[in-house]
Image 1 (tube, rainbow, N blue to C red):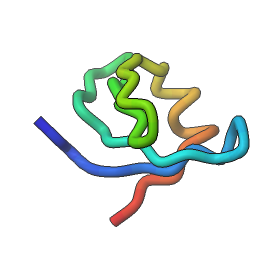
Image 2 (cartoon, rainbow, N blue to C red):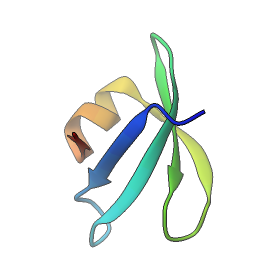
Image 3 (cartoon, rainbow, N blue to C red):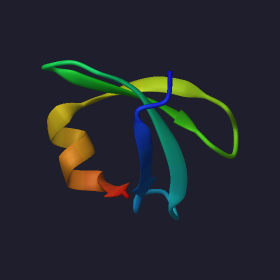
Image 4 (tube, rainbow, N blue to C red):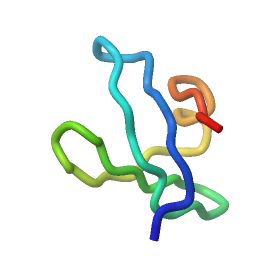
Length: 52
């Protein structure tokens, strides 16, 4: 289930789809590679920009 979209400004920049959010982590899927992974809330806030 898609929650929203974001853009990472690390590693040259890439778009992700936000799949899941809990109190400790955000699960994202890279739009270019379809890779799914978790990032900490702190890392997400520091390296990702949420798109509206």
